Length: 294
Image (cartoon, rainbow, N blue to C red; front, side):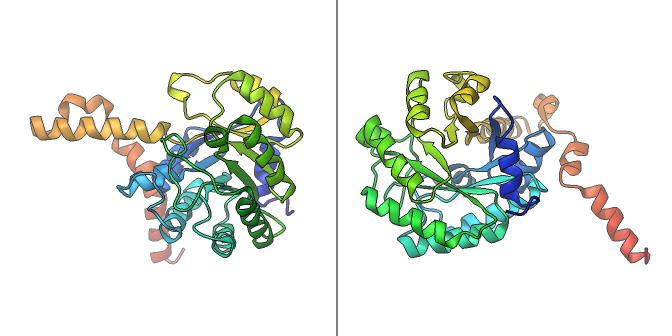
């Protein structure tokens, strides 16, 4: 694997002892740039957040082409910071999975995760989540593994079987997915310290990815303790978008009620941040230099 590849950069971050990689969820180029500006060492291109940004729920409505366009924005906005891409259930059968893996790999993502829900999938936090037969998911893993180039992206297997079939079945599935070529284990629905510890023991030495969907109410264990158990990546898919939704809703209501946004002026990003995060000044200077022959 080339030392400067996105996958290699993510692996180096994962190798830092006792401290998992914290990967905020982003959904477009602007949110990616803001996360990097805040100091994020890796980003999670959240399928749910991307769907909601398009005005759709996280019910598998958004297809590969739409996801690919947004993830491309995110990779560009990340500026070399590794991006973990949500590939949902692979957008169909094994041939579709292989196609999706190749397309996302060409974007330069560091890793991608594929889940064992039926297609179309739904948010793992919703009721009614089911899983395909284990053999179907193994076919997805084999297809993705065959399609991904030797230098990455890393392949992350996600199982939603914890809610649908119970802990023992979920862990048995994940062991099989790892044997089929997955490199990182993502067991959706782990919510307490005991379940995390049991998953870590059952799947050792595979690195774990933990979904901090309960971040707003607190993690079951601090990141350092999760790291000691074998969690190497923590993703925060919806936190930033929930904050953005609340801020936008307040701004729209204020403008429509008062005719301007002065009542919340202190909460508005200054123009210097708005334009600076997308590099407006630098690009204008570059254009001027080109026009001047420099």
